[in-house]
Amino acid sequence: MSEELEVLRERIDNIDKQMVELFKQRMETAGEIADYKLAKSLPVYAAARERALLGKVGEQAGEELADYAQSVYRSILSVSRSYQYGRVGGTSRVYDNIHKALETTPSLFPQRPTVACQGIEGAYSQIACDRLFKAPTIMYFQTFDHVFKAVESGMCQYGILPIENSTAGSVKAVYDLMLRHNFYIVRSARLKVSHNLLAKHGTDLSQVKEIFSHEQAINQCAGYLAGLKDVKVTVVENTATASRMVAESDRTDVAALSSRFCAEHYGLNILQENVQDQDNNYTRFICISKKLEIYPGADRTSLMITLPHKPGTLYNVLAKFYALNINLQKLESRPLPEREFEFMFYFDIDASVYAPEVEKLFRDLEAESEQMRYLGTYNEVIC
Image 1 (cartoon, helix red, strand yellow):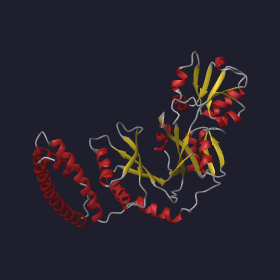
Image 2: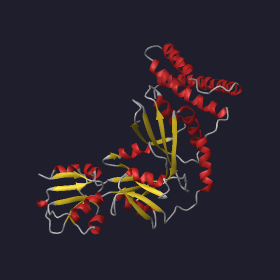
Image 3: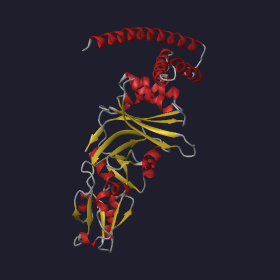
Image 4: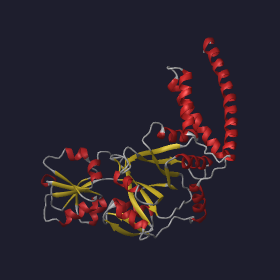
């Protein structure tokens, strides 16, 4: 290492030492401001004050460094607000409910509940359900919306819903329904999905003129389907329905993209195995409940946050994850119906509710978000 670089790094170290001391002074003063706000019943978050401060910082830093300086100060302001919330003794309504759930949830995940699944016997939701529960009583419903309603009404204790696929992406219909229903996630399952081309016994691949399947399965097998000539692809409710349609059809030129289980259940022949574009093809299912339940080993937390379409709103949320060193596993956005340019953001975070930083996160988000919904803390089973 050159002597010149060593001198420069020593200078940086000295500057950092001064900055840390100034940061400590700033936080101490922020604490005094929090005490004043508490005494005067004033809110911690002062948006106008922060905008003015960021503008002043950018001006003082000069044109070349304005963006960098404002980025640093956004983080400082986020940390300062969090510190002030703790100083004023702010509590989290969500975290109070979490404590109650931790006290009342049984230590063992239920084995024989009544579970709502979309589709019919042989659907991948049913397969995921059987992997999660030892001996479930399954009730089948035509749509995802009906699954939510069955759980919400108390007809079923749990519901199984696909939420994303490693090849085709998110199941957007389920995310949109999340906005309209009240529920909690109590477990999730990652199921390896292998699609097969099924037809009646005696049907040859060259005879197939139409293939039925669910939209997600079709997307996951897009490359394979593109290689078939003069074959119509028809979307149906789910892969199991596609198999039943083929089994009950009078036609001998139809086939279904579905599971090996459906081939056995509906008496069909497997024309070709594993026709999905990627062998490493997984679908993630969530298990929902009307009641908040947090079982031992839960280490994944899901949230939904509503934010206006304004500069910096999402950044402020993401800055909190960074400041608290919380790993973000998934971020999904969906437009809010009848609210122009406003969005719901779905977050999966790698954190247990036992972690103290999670309580700080909930407290801050409740105080500053337009709406924050806690969806549960759970663990994921790989099937």
